[in-house]
Amino acid sequence: MRGFDIATETTEAAETIRVTVNGDEVHAIEGETVLSTLIANGYKDISLNDHKKTQGAYCGMGICHACLVTINGKAKQRACLALIQENSHIETQSNLFTTIMEVSNERA
Amino acid sequence: MSEPKVHTPVAIIGAGPAGVAAAVRLNKAGINCHLIDEHQNVGGAIYRNSKRAKPALKHLDDDVKDGIAEILELYNSNKKNIEFLNNTQVLGAEAKNHKLLLLREGRCITLSYDFLIVCTGCHEKTIPFPGWTLAGVMTIGGLQLQLKSGLVKPGNHAVIAGTGPLLSLVAKQAHQAGMSVESVLEAGRRLDLAKHTKDLLKNKPLMTKGIRYQAYMKRHNIPMHWGWGVVEAHGEKQLEAVTIAPYDKNWNPDRSKSKTVETDVLGVSYGFLPRSQLTQILGVRHEYDKFSGLRPVRDKLGRVSRHRTYVAGDTGGINGSKVAAHQGTLAAIAILIDSELLSSDELMAEAVEIQEKVAPLMAFSQAFESFSATRPGLLQLPKNDTIVCRCEQVTQQQVYDAIDKGAKDITGLKMKTRVCMGDCQGKICAAYCCDVLKQKTGQQDVGRLRPRFPLAPLPIGATANTEVEA
Image (cartoon, rainbow over all chains, first blue to last red; front, side, top):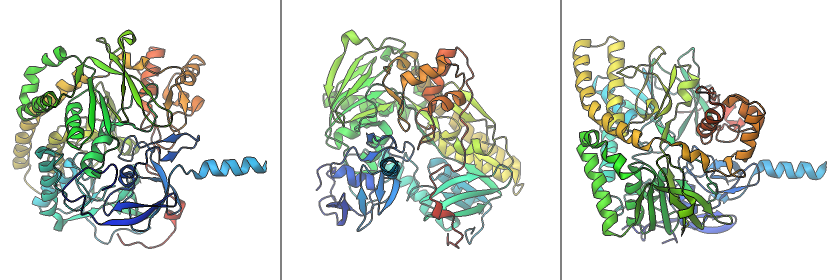
């Protein structure tokens, strides 16, 4: 069981799939959202917004856009809507816009 | 752009209680439909079941499990005639024609319909306060979704604050899931709720549940305070503690009596707002309801001011899941009447019977709405440096300055500060910004935020011209 799993009869026996978060391998359970995977493994301030502020999930249902993570290279994915899949690579606190702004400021 | 292979006469947006009820009633009359939802399964937010295979869910009580089981069963016994487009976002709709633009599997597809039912539900209203943007502060709905559907705990401790019947339900669920519930804070006073007893008794099952949850909290020594609320959330990068205080009858905190409670999760709920972005884009007439906020105007069967378009469920006004299911059935009946396929006398009789069931349920929800209506004290919670628009990091001070410099409506405020222009497109901050504008300018009408296409983020690659199977 992961740190923040709720103990249910089948949690212990649940088949875990392999995914990485920021390069580290973590346990995920087939059928859960990326947000649940992150929460279960103790990740809280998972996103970096366009103004470089870190945030965690707020509404849990796709409205607030405060849970944005990069999944398999695609930026600004709502973790609360995306289903976790085998071999997913998730990057937390990752924001393409702020990266581009930094690069363009360096070049200026 | 491709269309799904099968055409059906009715498109239903939202597979929660309203959408599924509508699909089932249409199926009974032999009419197929497309049912669209951004999630994997039917159920909506309220009956979001665990996508993981069949856990025992001991931490959830039977009502939730029964609700989830019931809606799944309704769908499963009718699914032969329901084209369920799951994991599908509605990007937009044209006001003048009968097509929807959808995002499915990373591609745009169109869907033609003859009749449209919008059941997009609601989302929580946000009240900003110092520290509310810390990781660990979340809506009660967000907390509940992780407990009942994600099957994970967002932390080890919880403070639950706000107003309304959800507080004690989620406190119980959090406790049963193994979280330590430090405090439950209802802004309203017990005496004020007692004034509505006559209306509350009109929905005995729900009233009984409320009493049960209170008894559970007493049994497990979970402190519940009436007439108390949040003042500030504290922490470096994540939530570590919450300052709470008694509220007066206008929900102004008495900071001299404040206490600080350590916690890593704060669940807040100050009511709900209809998800009316799509109905607005369709050009449907809307009105401001003092409890529900901006909602499409509809008749007793759910018809709105657009040809062959209907609204059912919380999108048309916040009344909960049981009313939503009845309204879904009523919208389906309206389509049957309007398409003149069946005798309207029998259909009207059926509708009247359903409306009689709805009336006491609405009396109950309206009693709570009156009890839980936002009081002006909450608008005083933010400090000058408190973020009010989290997407664009706009502070309370910046909002006040813009109003001082002449911003009179939400559009003017948006232009001067960038509120409502970020990733969430104002879903979180618009209501609060409008409340502040009304308070500061003294005007009742401060305009509306106009939703625009696309209603969901759209990757450019999705517009590539390739054929897609739906």
